[in-house]
Length: 383
Ligand SMILES: Cc1ncc(COP(=O)(O)O)c(C=O)c1O
Image 1: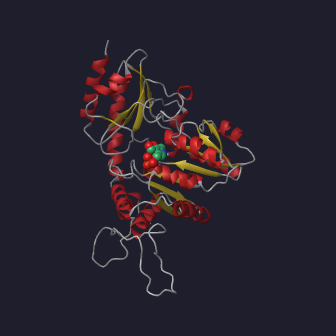
Image 2: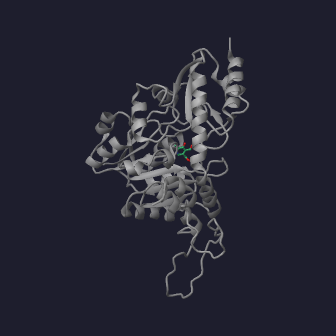
Image 3: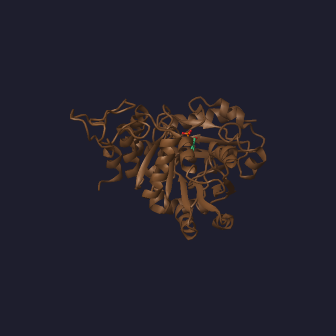
């Protein structure tokens, strides 16, 4: 058993070539030849399995301490694969601030398909308990909600799930296994948009799923193979490569995040900063401290009423105005018009995503340059 940081580099095994290559090969083959028509072979068709994808699936399985990993063509395809293990008429309890695309897949697709959904604040364990019904089959949430960074206790929800014989499904995109391993805290299924920190360079779209037992593995394998949203060998290799630098990237990103927060705290135009360590009396901080190895590199902040959030965002030069997060470059976005536009305004305001809320995903640039960029943008909105 090697350390997590060693696993990041060496976890994807180079096991079937004789060249001395230090990286697993990219197998660009959709089909594989039989030696004998009567003897089954391990690989027969690349949707069912591909050695390059398997190297990544093995790697994420190890990093999440799971039973089996699966590569999908996007995070949403991974979520589709997971939710497809349920039956029409099943009920799910879902975090009320899940990613907008997930919210839309649940409400605009899976409701039509026959799933019943109740959205709750998963930080409030009573709300979760009260939402569970006879036909409830799972609780689904993101540990750190996006963009408000509200923290859910994976271990406490696991207890509730176990008492009710239902599954706990965690989208671990924001934290990654470097900062939290939900299966170790009792979750049953972990999902990643590998497009974000695992890929790490804004140059691919990918999704990963890890499950904690054989029965779930069979179900997810069926979804992966029959729905067919599998990850290509080239992209599997890029995600594997991205994962090798996950820890060093996140270390720098978290360092930069803390410096930016220190600057925002001193800024008179900032009304509120959402990041677990900002309010040491908060439940978010207490849960995050207990269940994670770090608070990540996404934060959001509200500027004071009457100041122009759109102008502030448009004035940034180094921060790119873009959705997504988790890459080497810093990004900024306005959730109300970008990532969370699918959520009706009334509901969005109810869950605290105001029009003047700005989210930043901190990259690896010099923290001083990032802070200077914010400073010059704040000057533009000064009255
Ligand atoms: C938390 C979270 N889950 C899932 C997704 C969907 O992933 P993808 O864009 O790779 O389909 C996203 C995308 O932004 C996300 O932020």
